[in-house]
Each structure stands twice: as C-alpha cells, then as structure tokens.
Image 1 (cartoon, rainbow, N blue to C red):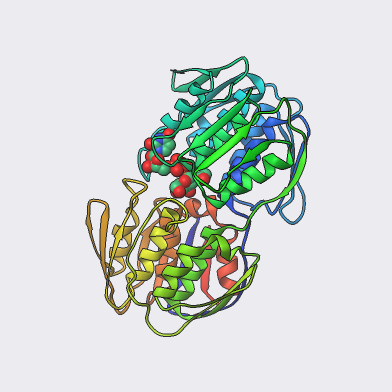
Image 2 (cartoon, protein in one colour):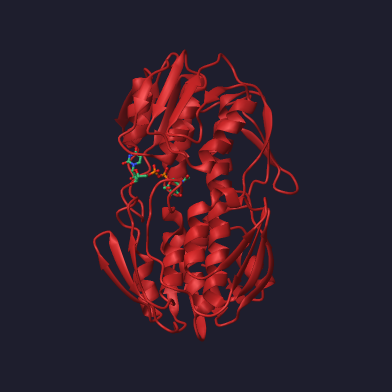
Length: 417
Ligand code: UD1
C-alpha cells in the first residue's frame, strides 16, 4: 500500500493548477446514461473515484474514452445492464447516482445499497422517497435497491434534509419524467449548478438550480452535449490551508473563487492574505495562524469537506477554536491522528475544541478517509521532522497528483510504494 513521506517545516512557494471538481464530475458522468448520444466532458480529473465510475458505467455498456487535458467522451447507446453491483458500489457511495438516470431512461434499475461508511451512516432514504413520489415502485431486495417505473411522472418533493447527491439523483430522474417536478429544500452547491448546466445543454428544462427550489419540466428525450467541469473548490481550499499552515506564497490557477466564499472568509480570519481574480487566487502567509472556529453547513456555508483541513490549521494557531460538525455524525477520525502529532483537541459530541500549539511533531499516521488524509498531509507539511501518512489510497480517490503539485511548491513529499 502506498504511503507519503513528508519532511515538514518548509514554506510553500509557487503556482498550482486546480483540477476539475470530483463532486461535479461524478454525477455528470452518470448523466451520460440519460441519452444515446455522445457526451463530451473537459477538465475531468484523473482520480480513483472517476475510474470507479467509468468502470461502473462500462459494465452497463457505456463506452468511454479518455483524451488529453482531462477530456472524456461517453456514449450510452448500447446499455445492456441496469445494475450497479456491490463490489463497485461499496468502494464509492456516489455510485447511487446511477439510480435516477437508469430509472428515467430505461424504466428499471438495480443498484446495490452502499452500506456503512467511515464518516457516518449516510443513508439513501431521501433518494428513494423522491423517486417513489415520481411513481417508481421501489423495494430493497438482497441488499439492492430495485426500482421500476413505466415512465416517471413529475411530483412536488420536499426532502427531509438538504442532500447533495439526493438532489442530483432526483434532478436526473425528473428531466425525462412526464410533467413538472419541484424539488424543495434542494441542495445549492456549485456542483448541482454544474450538473444542471450539462443537463440543460442536453435539452433539459430546469430553472432555479443554485437555489433551494429547483423546477424541472420533463422532456421526451435528451441529446448529446459538450461541457467543461468546474474547478474543485475543495482541492483549492486544501492548498490554501496548506500554505496558511506552512507560510509562504502560492498562486492557484483555473480556480473559481466565487464558489469559495465561506472558505476564503475563514482563511482570511486565520491571517491568510488573499487576492482573487476571476480564475486565480494568490495567498500569502506570514507568521502564525489565528484560531478560527466554524460550523459546517450546506452551501453557501462552510463545507464539511473542508472541516478536517481547517482543523489541522487550527492545531497550529494562536488561541482556541471551537468547531462544530453538523453534516456527518462521525467525521472526526483525523483527530486521534493529529493528536499523535502533538495537537491538543477535545471532542464533545459534534463539537471539537482545538487549542493551538506552537508546533506539531512528525509521526507515522494513518489516513481514514479522503479529507482526513488531506488534513494529515497539511499537518505533516507544517510539522517538525518526518511524517509518514499511511493508506493514502483514500487521498487518491479525490486529489489529482497531490504530491506532485506539492513538490512543485517546494514541499519535500514523496510517495513510497
Ligand atoms: C456529498 C458529497 C460529499 C459531501 C456531502 C456533504 C458527492 C459525491 N459527495 O455527499 O463530498 O461531504 O455531499 O456536502 O457529491 N442523508 C440522509 N438520507 C439521504 C441522504 C442524505 O439521511 O437519503 C443525510 C446524510 O447522512 C448526511 C446529510 O444528509 O448526514 C447530507 O448528506 P448528503 O448531502 O446526501 O451527502 P452526499 O450527497 O452523500
């Protein structure tokens, strides 16, 4: 199993090009199931989760091709299976995103239930509730969600909570349904907007994406389209946390600062000097960060996917930060590993109290999930001495060539195979 070895204590300097957003690319790849025409995507990151999704679609009969510069084309003209098997779904919960498109286009789907997950229960009851409201017959059989519908019909759907992939699944189902669907309490994340824009380019009729009320008027069929995936705001935020922890000056290219409001606000509060253009961010850090408490929430609030990274920064800050995780019930698994590096953190239910220390000391630590891994890399870059981050396959799920990008910024980081 690969690991990362980091010699900490070096400031970061230079430029990084931000990759396409994983969480935008995953639903968009699944949207290719909605048409028999070719979908061409640009800026698709090369990540393990993308590979898993292409493998899943491939098993169904979707033909995909990767070109240079993150171009991927997909054609779902000859789909021969509407099943998502457990061996692929268990490695990536986002596989549930094939459910809506399969049901909408083919009238049936059999998708393995994702099961437990390191960062919490993460059920899919809202996906099922919404599809049932659109007329699907759905039941659970041998660990699979089995769904049938001759043709889905429009419905007014209010989800019990804001769910990102739930909103995406229902939006993809509604675009081919008969009549109007209204999604209330919809997620507003930029990745939802990106998916809606692809669907509109394919001929879908959608209004209100980016707000909590999305209105979709179903059409008979969708056609091919070309689309560019938005930049990854979480990858960008991770690099900004890294420079805030190590000091130095970095410039991010091909980034979308307008999707990063809450992240940039918090990092400014921590002392990072930030200048932005339409597609670039320059960040400079002098001295020690200031403690910055925050609560995770749905967009446009502070994203749960940045909680671990900003916590890592807070372990080095002057002062005490109070952090509350409101989205997932078990998303503090990085805490024990950060403590092994000398961090002072107390957990009380959903709240973490982080008392900043002058310095962390390098240690061997274990990555437990994607964003936890990123927080350990940040801590390792800032710590004194050597840190080894084990089980970095988690990192490879969501960060494209992270160690190469950090090396280009002057970090001493190496992948050990
Ligand atoms: C997506 C993101 C993930 C991010 C999360 C929250 C993708 C591929 N993944 O995950 O990176 O951390 O949003 O921003 O985009 N819930 C239910 N029932 C449901 C659906 C959700 O109870 O049917 C709960 C979840 O357990 C969680 C909360 O709702 O507590 C939000 O989850 P959700 O937004 O659905 O997360 P994902 O879409 O899985």
